Image 1 (cartoon, rainbow, N blue to C red):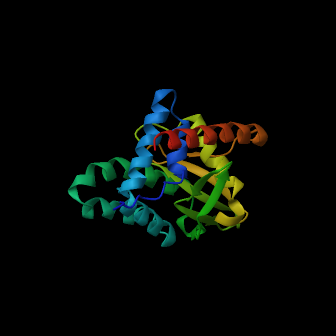
Image 2 (cartoon, rainbow, N blue to C red):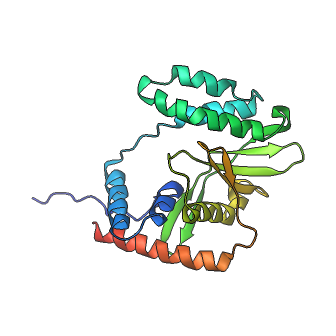
Image 3 (cartoon, one colour):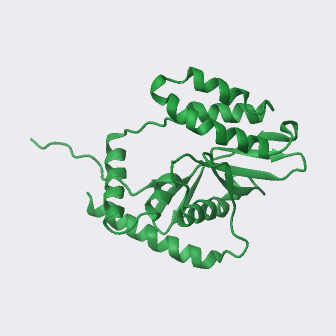
Length: 214
């Protein structure tokens, strides 16, 4: 009697996973990809920031300037309260930096699937914002204690911009470092061809590590 075998896991990454991967060097790349693969196989994973993002979106949508953020700190599970307390001041400052709350609205974004060679990467901004003058931004949030590296920032912004027609047409990609209330944008002189070559190499290595971990 033969036992059924599970189908092989196709290499795949979320934008967050891939940008964290490019931020690593040497053996840490392999251990990181191996961890992603095991997580995918077990279908595990939990997003502790879900309620925080929902509150931030509500403040944008209802023009409340931080009211929902202040409230969510009190209702989140005690386990996550210190995290939310650390994130709220920066997020509130970022909201205020957008100007008059009445002049900013929430914009609907859609996920997209980017292909770097044979590696699919899920492009998933947290939300979009649209200003009174019509300018829009697709917002990706960075929650980590350490600020995003130049490499991780460039990869996230480039891949989002590459698929903006699907994500939020005519918008600009931004990466918001929540804790420090800093908004990162694509550098004016970014060489897109050079970035593509760099990311293609990273994606090929990601696939190779993934397959080796099988």
